[in-house]
Image (cartoon, rainbow, N blue to C red; front, side):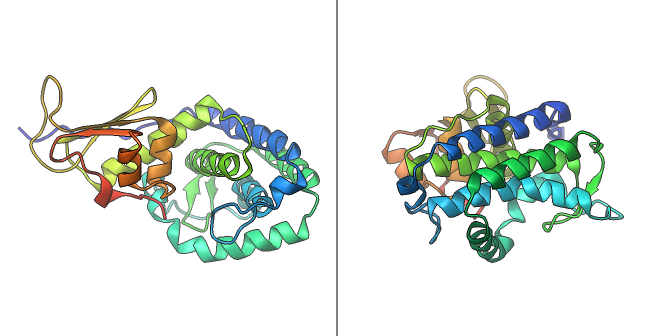
Length: 264
């Protein structure tokens, strides 16, 4: 009997829209509370400062508005699960654009207010199936907004760690981010010999090998959502997470170190 085909995960577009706006508001309030000393700290992302990281966070949302302002492309080019693997090529352009944005917008409060107003207005009338000419490839608005949860959650965590802040993570945004990166792992290493558990949001099976059918799987990895996100995006190394007991891994096929990070 051939293995059962895995169904592609779906997301509720209405909930994702709410999550993106909610997390952006969380960040806006958190950035407003940062001191000049905090903004001047290194962001631990290349040569960025916290101020530059804060400016970059607005790009994650403003790109939605800008793409909605552009002509609609003729055809979809990128599926949601392709996106995590299509981002690394743009790292240089993103770094240059971030420095320029931070330099041109010293008033972060005004920048955040402008970006929030634009996306709120544009999402009010844009249909979920509207295609966006994203630089990684044309995607539907509904799919692209799921990718925005990844950008917002990952960089909110970066901001918290670099600035010593405590900006909250919207539960729906954290869930979508966790699930997309978990599904990306399953797409990168298809199979059913290893079960990766990220409670309470995701469980995926991956890695070639004997298929598990009942009882406790022979290869199990379990971790929390933030640790998983840091592993998937290269913020934490696999061995470090194991040494710090942030990940439990049992079984000969439970070593995911060679598959991570998923996003550079």
